[in-house]
Length: 457
Ligand code: MEV
Picture (cartoon, rainbow, N blue to C red):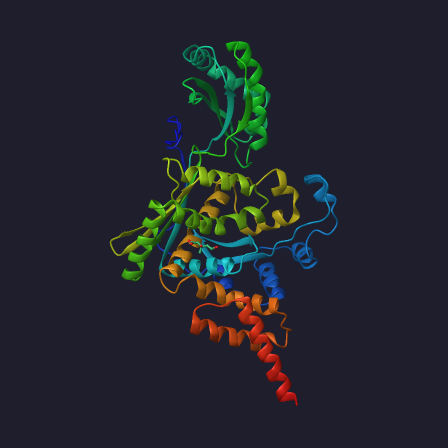
């Protein structure tokens, strides 16, 4: 299956933030803060974020109280509410993206994601750069007409009214976006095979949503156009909805490792080729990329299902599922890129209403939805580099399981007093056998308890 990508893509319009090429700028305040941050306890971390102006006193109080308590807000978002599902919220450090330092809020349950992101960002900071850009501005709405009497006639009629449809949509529906510099920009007609030898007609509406994700407005525009299109063509609209395959607004991140061991760079290049050529590996590679992206989407109240759908569809754009990242050696450097549709908002919906999302957005210090999508792309690419570095050297178990040992100790039922002993023994087993499991933890705990009992006798 060859996926058709619309040829009228608006890919040359670039919004980019040109950062300095080398991370050799003087240490900023945030860079100072990054030093030793992971060694602090929670109270000290919050204090530090307060001191650096990333959190306000009221934010700290709110986080210390444990976030939302009563379900009034939840009732506004969804139906049949019975409580909140809470995820741990952490911050990744050491990120310098386009020459600007960022603290990255991440809401995620998986051990080692935040640590790996911070560790890899530090490695890049010391040896290379991260730069990003947004290519195109417009999201896509689709209007389907499952049957048209004559496609050529239909297309010609719709395109003849194109400017009028754009004007009407902007005047009647997208006026708020127009005021902020966005709005409906274009309209195209596509022929899509029905699979039975006949075709359906699909109109694409392109709209610049500025700093909103734009889902509601684009859906309203498409539904608004339904009646004038039916009246003009005499054909019937079947349905209207946005597309999550937004190839007209792509975000790209680029990591250049100026200094890197040649053998490591070669292995990472090989790992990258693996994920480009083999869909089985590509799926896992992209899962690792999303390990970096989803936690920010969740923390900022963005629709991560929409981004996931877009990423996977874009990864299949030539008919085979491939990695959305690529790593290549260039001279003595290793250069990585990530390209994907990352449609997010910084205004409207949950982003503004959920107090935790509002805090996280503020902490990120992004000034636009484009900047947020650039940060998300950068973190996805950094997470990918961290995973490939581990996979091509020590393997995934070492980094992952070391951090998981405490969880295993807890799961085995170790008390606070017992945990250090169990952990130490499990680390020894891990170093020796290169694997560790819950049953190891249970056995070790039994042993620790019997030794403790013996020594107390
Ligand atoms: C685990 O959550 C993610 C990785 O599998 C990603 C990858 O294989 O690239 C480590």
